[in-house]
Image (cartoon, rainbow, N blue to C red; front, side, top):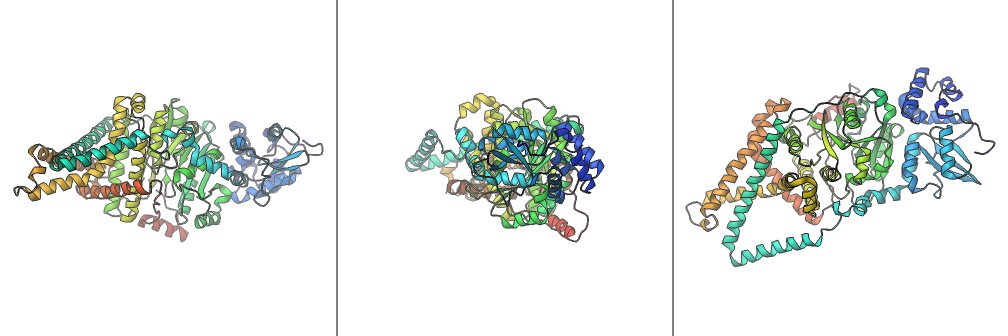
Length: 635
């Protein structure tokens, strides 16, 4: 460092010495806050000033802390938004280091390189000198300001990684990679053979197609029943013992938002309720750079001074996984979770997830919390959606785990070891059901997925249009995921074993195929009932085909009804059981969504249909209560 630069304390004494005395004397912090921050920073090796800012004073005082510290030490207090870093100084190869150490090359004056930092101590000075290869000076800023400058400076590199990281490094696992030739040729031969059959023997071809469709439909429902039976027999997983505060890992929370200004206050309240040391949280609101209303609301609420606002430049595909990929290289935690705008996790969820991930086996890459709806009884659609979710989280996921079938993750509140997420190259930005795909890729790399005993409450879509858009996107993502998995079926067979491979095809592919086949099976049975005895369609329904069709229709619908009726038992939602009698009508809607998804997959494969949040009566009531200054709504 230059000879006339002020002497800097070492990391352990930045707050313990004169600088800490000065901040206390200025009234910016109290003595207890200072001591707690010192202990936490020393134990976890955290940045002292960031620990203090998160631990003690209000978030609005971060810049005041930075200015007071700079004045005490005779350093520059920098505003990187007004004076951005020299474009030639930061190196893309060090992006992760800059984020982890909160240290960024800023300006050069002659032979001296000036670095932005949050804590101007000897550790950062030595690190900066090693990076610069010459004399350096430190300038002080706040963490939100430094992280925003980092994201702005590397926006092009982060955008390229977000879109192309998986497609470049593992193209066979990306939905953005064109289908291999053999898949295209196989599909062409299937269509050609079907067309030839219809031309040469239309009645026999239609009869055979009817029988195959009915058999597959029935086989898929039997498979789901077997998975549910396996899930019923599975005992509750033993919870990991709670970790003491000193053993808790740093935790990154990504909250990707798109046009969500109305529910942003509820997300902020939910994050405030989390029982986890503030200094160990790395919270990033991931926003689209052209989403002016949500950005304005975040700033109105002061969230830009408490959390990192990561602004994603507009580019295609405009999907949630691409936004998460953009923020991934900026993550500073050892663990990472995604929460959506309407999510309200139980307050101890991070502690439970951290305990499971830290104390679990080395191969544990992810744990998933259960999802629940706080507006399940709002109308018929939310009741059926709640039954759907209960079956998924209480029976199907445990059943897949018990049978050794790779688990396609569902919903949000998936907690990852950051190293595992990076090992699989993050999310596929081209897959619109990114969690299902990610669960299978984690399994492919040898990671296991577990479940924790914690719940995240969210809003069930309560209007038909909103539900249809959301379910169509999920179905389209399952189609993308199945197409990717089918590129190398033998590799999947070797990796997952025969049960696992067949389970993936039956569960992921079968869910889509059964939803598409549902109206066909119903149509065939109704056509037979309507024309039975008239002889009009008898050639299409020889006795074997008739038997198969009626069995699939009758036993298949009984299976759907049975699964819907047992779905609420583990949650004690016995009042929802009678609504299971309307399952067939719900599955008609699922089929409409599936056919809509198929059309989109063929014409707009990467289009992300936005689910509008904040429309339910429950959420509107909480928001109205909040506006009146009443107590904040709890899950």
